[in-house]
View 1 (cartoon, rainbow, N blue to C red):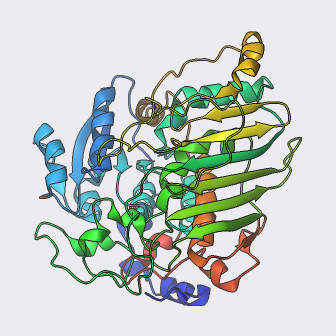
View 2: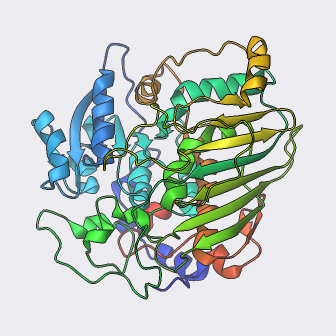
Length: 474
């Protein structure tokens, strides 16, 4: 595929969608709101994506005891990875196309889970919100900056629709500790954050001198390849596009940054009020090519002064040997038990396990990923501060229960699109720096890239293929 997409071309394609071609999600937008769910009622939940990570999400919602599964949707109902959920819940109606599911069962659905590849989040979420369905969307919210922007606009347009991005640590110990420590002045005057993910990735070992996409292979007879592609275009089936391999490719996934950034930087981004960066500099891109992610990446994100807080530089490090500087007194980097294993198996040990080092003017903190809490380093300083640390409240609900309780009006979600959207857009800008190899200069107010016309066009990305244009209207 050619990466030279134009904004004008996108807008032209988008205008081709007539009212007659619009989906129910667009035609009925604003005409119906979510069903009021009684205190003793369960949330009628439809799960879109029930294999791999989607299956884990489904099981997590089942454990809350707050959900009633009314529909399952997956583009490959015959795949081995979907069978566990189907055997566990054999009587739930099944669909391969989310549009058909909404058409046939929309009146029975209160909320949906979106546990599908990054590039697929957008159309499903937009249709669901337009139909008045609450949405739990796996992280990151979408693949392009513009898609995230439209999802945030839709959330404002449909304020009764509950949204939650699936960075599950955002409802656990790390969330409440970070918030409390900022509120009580333990974390203050942060000037630098080093975030790192140095475990092996799926594309490590691939040839970075790639000149084209993989050759066409025969798709499994059970897979609806047409629906799998969603709004993307120009790809034929290859096993290296599916079952998690999609994360490797710029066209489909968000690499290590989009995968792990939402579990490592989420609390710092929210409680330090970082917003969007004004500059993203690809300091290191080892094995850079135009198709899949580099073998190692170092990105510098620069955020301006905010209110009474100083400017912050966030550096992102991925790659097996691409470690951040380790401060004196860091201690041991153990694999935190709070980090859940990926659907492909256990996390392979790395020289430095996923996490972050936070530097403030007075204190230095080290932390892991997901629910992992921060500790003050070195140990001598931690002992000195121990008596000054405030009590941290415990979480009243995990991320999945939090979403379902919010659907019932009992809680507010902790990672709604208004909070998760700007975080996801930070990752979108980082990916553009990885893809283009260019320093990104960004106007935070106008939300445009001023340093490169090409990069600015990629904020929107390619035109959606025919039949998918209507999701880009809010």
